[in-house]
Length: 382
Ligand SMILES: [Zn+2]
Ligand SMILES: [Zn+2]
Image (cartoon, rainbow, N blue to C red; front, side, top):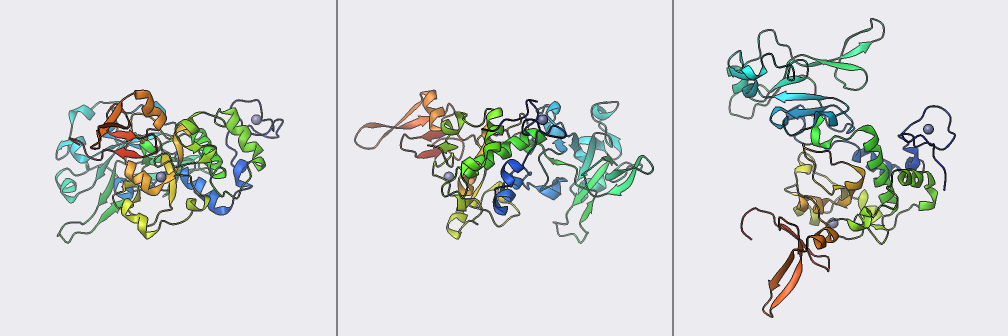
């Protein structure tokens, strides 16, 4: 076993030269093939979701500025977002009538349009009835200029030392029968907040996912070649954590899909889904705008939400794209979890009462001892 630097925020080798660093992707990248490196890289990105129409950025790292919809503001803990946030307001939230600001935003130091908030125009109707104030400008990004020592270089890119300016964004599509043009002005403002993870958390999630790639069936890798990765996982209590087996992220040391419990084959990570499986994907929110998916994708044990950060190392795994779709925005309970509820579900199959399995407290998720799983898809009666 190799030894790591004793600094708790450093994952480099003991007695390393140079600065301390938490992030050390070479722990897997030096041995991984390009497809697997990309797979891990993508797992650290936000997935496209409603994307451009909401002013969201896509395909950027999770440790980015987030957009908080005004109506979600009371649910979130703003301290969670170490890379900053901006509040999104619709015209109908900010104005009560043409050029009349809703009084809750007057002398309100926590929500200031142009400072930590912007107004998003999605329809011509709003743009005409609740137009921007006469002195307002479209949102823009200014980059720091080392020469002038000011933020004065216009940019479309959020990377580097930048500031946001302006008041509103136009994302108006001509979807009706009118002959007006699409209005699309101002740069993307940030990422979907539930996808956020700070840089170190994002790195540890990637380290876990790399480890789970090494542990797939027919993996081309030998875990003995990844002593540095193992040492990093060990340092953060992620090497032999019981959650892997309890949550069926692994079973008997092999990577498994937590929903269907089948072993994940290494080739499924980068193989495109076959036609037979596509039926299961048609309702997937994750797949909107994209027509292709790999058979196995990043799988969250707990659905991402606004209230808490759930993209964390003990809750990420690999799972089938079709299983991800079937699970939808629900928590993935393991048999282990359900056994602890002691809620037994029985059925009468004609030969008397028989134990079907165990359920969660909401009784919308049941597993049998033999690995079958039932999820209630709609609310209401069974
Ligand atoms: Zn160090
Ligand atoms: Zn599965």
